[in-house]
Length: 456
Image (cartoon, rainbow, N blue to C red; front, side, top):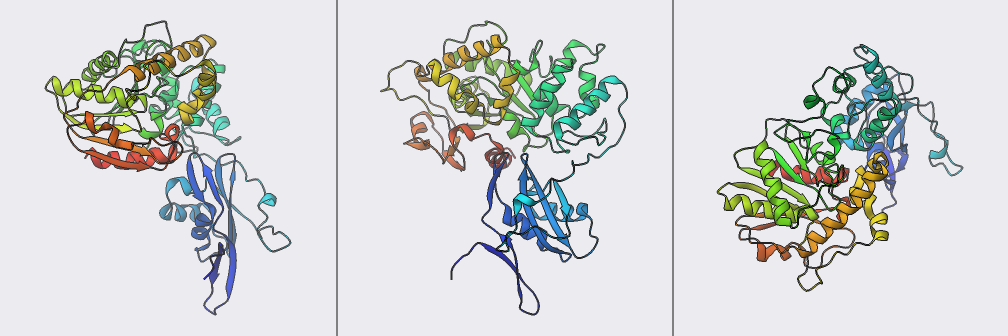
């Protein structure tokens, strides 16, 4: 049997209707998606004769030909019950017929642009700040002239980490200041407007005092980024990669509902604060901040890349002090080879070329940095790289859950390189990503599913 890749439907009388292709793979916000799978779900509805799905401006849009007046909202709701969230079309367009090429295939280039997706509406804005932010929500999300309610959830309307960064930029230009983390925690125009109210105490507006972490000044560079300050589940403490920023963990937190998520960030970006002289010193600082937020264990710690070294040392220090570590997780972080020279490996060209990749989807936030901040960030990266190549891990008296990237230049020895530094088990979890993409949308969702089970 030859697999043609054609999607068909056989009727009760044996006739076969050609519906499309199942090998149209695309990547949307980090997820690899077969458009044919979505089309198959749409066409499975008894009132749908044909369907096609395309990507427009990083969103999935579906087109259907129906035999009755079935509402697009009903079709989308049905698809949402049968597909993962990231595969549900953001909008559906009903057509009398799909445009075809001369050989009878769907001509995707001739599919009409959809009308701007409509938000949910809801409570109208109260006051100029809410009115401004509702308008910025609409502009950022592409909802056109449709009204956005003051209590509408940014992410429920189609927002994501990248769009949250764009929203921050638009708001800053309009004189309203908040951070991507603020958007994640305070998801509505009303809540974000309250952050900028002049009569709101500075400690509340900036996030200071959340778990004892001082986030005065720009909260985007706070020593501890309170991505989700509260929740009923055990907190997860995340250690930044080699860039020093906790922003990429926004994508992970999105898939850990009701789990408090705090991300440590390196100093020296907002000011000229010196970097720690060793990974051990950095780990001690982070342990101190973590204990301020969560005085007693058990603790759950995760580190990405360089952060894997710091998280490992944090676990060692916690156990030595008599505290319990329930989870030590490492996202594709490796100790330096002792045989290699102990010196930094990043030159200026490499820094400027790889910085955005190292931040993953959050890389667009670099556009919001001032020249001084960007220069300090480069110095931080170089300092962290030097710490990484000079650090020699100690023995952790516990288990290690290692998340290994399976794409790109994978590490030759894999998780076994941690065996001399781990007294307990080493459990390997494969992630369909390269090293820099471990916290892109799809890999982050996969990692979060494992973490949810491990943190029960």
